[in-house]
Image (tube, rainbow, N blue to C red; front, side):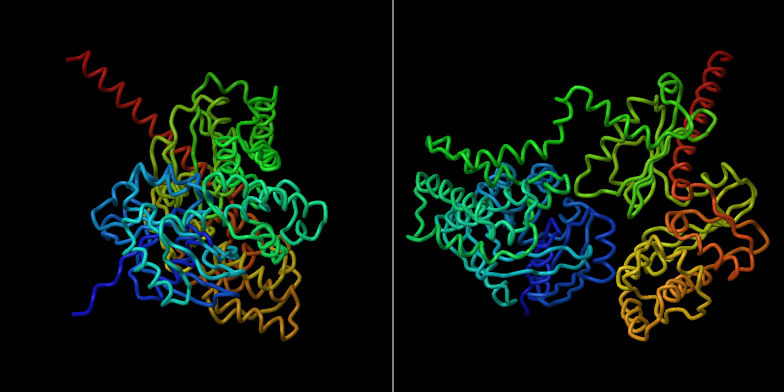
Length: 613
């Protein structure tokens, strides 16, 4: 009988996790992925993982989960954590459900002592540490541009009790052309220090100085800083009985001089305002230096600078800063009113967690909009969403709340959840009651909703199997055509081109766009051709004739020319709702209001029945 395939689970689908997933899948393993980001999950479901540049490969996956605990049904042999070290603690409660006698856990993070974050949940005897010697960047949610691989990777059991499993793991990767060497616990500790010294010498400096690796290594002033940070770290390592060969500092400098003209991961996180892993880089060098009374002045300086720049709570220590942040959010989000009068009156919150953007709406007792806000959905840094939620909580008396959209099931800060179909119907009905069609073109799907005379959803249609004609489709096509997406609508309005893309598939459509460009087609004609394709896609969905039709969603908000084409296509007077991006979140807020009214009415009736009885 054929041996059963090794079952691999991967948590964290950045460059490191994506490359591992592809390699194990190509090696014939049964790979399960945990992806919380809805856009990335849908992209990988539809198109798989794509690797380019240094590693060229494509792979498809059938087991994709939105939570770690859901992977328990797979009874995994290996569970790989390829997420940032600071996310580990939050993942451990779910991960504990996967613990079993046969499970081996792999730490594939950068930094010193990161494997110890897994020990309280799994114990030392189950854990392998992997030192990754490749890197890449995400160019699309499912696509990694692998920038380099300096083989081999290293893998070792942290207490040598899983040496056999380390050999098996390495053997699979070697068979998939990702050279990996299994080593003992002492060697893996040395390799983790070696890799961290390289990361710590350059990453914080690049982040603070806004320098690429090439820029930092080609400037004599910063070059001196890099060499001194390496020297400090080597001195600390030696007090931990970790010995490097003669000329190690020179080897490090030679290695770093090969760095490309791009930012290290930590520097990118700092520049983009996200949390960094500096605690496990320079922070660990400083920590061990203090333990042995070794001065680490430069590592300490850059560690403190990175912490000061990335500390999300620093505003609370600056007089007036939280107020300024709240004022900025309120100034952007308030709808023709001052927030001061809403602290003592009942308000209702709707949160639409779309595939690309989160929209929030607050309404009053009459259902009129008081506040609305938009920001990227579930970015890696969720602090901005938390800031908006806190601003709403402190300035409005939110009696009840409702979440909707792709991410509604993973958002625990509202009282109820509803589908975006029902919320869209409620949002449109607030201004236009009676029978109607609603066309909602979003980031990842198209919906056509039919409402009856009582404003209830009587039917709906979706293209949820394909993202063609959606916001993500438009973004990718515009990028391939090198057209500023904000200009597409005005460009299309100046064209009379009447041909569409032959393919609805995003991949093939992008190839076809290239042929249009090679044929010398103007940006105006390309834009109109793309819009015609989307209109034809919508036209294939059923639209009830003879009743009003309204358009909502982010796409029509930024691509108004679609209204013209769809009106011609259906021979209907199609109307666009005011502020179309917020209609679904408005509907969620109105449903929260209706839910409260119904509960209050039921409570009053019960009270009266109790009095009568």
